[in-house]
Length: 444
Image 1 (cartoon, rainbow, N blue to C red):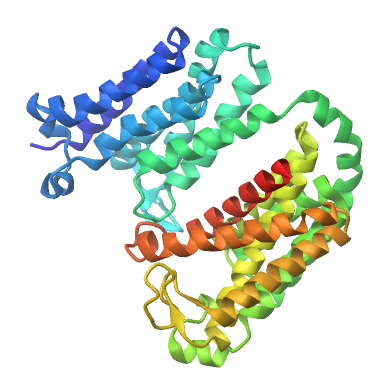
Image 2 (spheres, one colour; image 1 turned 135 degrees about the horizontal axis):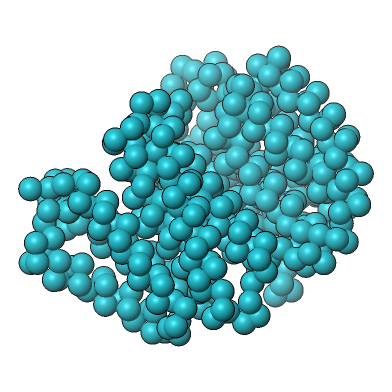
């Protein structure tokens, strides 16, 4: 008979194999992950493994979570072949953090999370505490095998930040398997932290300190005003305040100015044609008032890029990523809202079949054209504000177009199947825009 407790004990115990990353080369570790995948697929079901296969997986005919676990470990190893400490630390968060959250939530979970009643505060805290401790241990354990060895600050701080981020992502109410979202988030955060250097920070610390007081003042006024004007909910006000402070402190008034223009663009376009959108049932929820999830999905990556511009040796690339993330997110909002309000024929790009407005992944000519113009306008503002050179504007717009295409494809498949939600797609959209823009600039 199936036992969730037994499943989670096995899930956690598999993390012990991360100890081998101290002595294995990356290709040996990759072969080990492949062997684990074959074992889970072929041997485990015949060796008493059915006791840890959930009923839903049994009815499906294959244990998706059990199979995707070694696949995620394999991708971590392939993504960071020269930094197996990152792979080991993220693996620790996947194994121990995710497993502890389930066990603690089932045993002691009494206080439900406001944004996801299926998750508990106790489970989230267990994830962060256990996952963070395991991640720090594995980062420390594998550090001697890394050349040059990572700094002590990275070993102690980065895994904890990764555990917090992965723990929060694990609570997002989506159907995407935790064995995918948790290691992906943990690996990304650890990688970003690995880029931070003391020298880069020292060169910008005085400017950040000088920006901090005006950052706090301006964002307190702006966030409070947005809440009073009912453009954001309380969670959106708090998240927007934190993002705004990070951007202003890192990039000063020009960076915050572009962030504000992006927010203003989203707010105004959300209210265009509101009566038609309401009649069609495709208006933004709560009158377009933004929450914390929406704020981070659309501008969170920009905030991360802003911090990277002062904390890493890659300020130019980080600034391109900052402008591209905002232009992509802003352009996407313009495309969506203009398309809903005044778009003509709406169709799915993959099949060119006509669908009703508001269908996940659907686009219209009017909306797409407006989105490109919106991205161009925001990218141009980024250049005028001195954030990026003028010649990079075309790369930013190209990134925005790529991000929109990826988001449309994922919306038509994953969102329509309720595997991910719109906030996840918006984050993927801005990330794609930033990555493509940086790639184009680097090749130019």
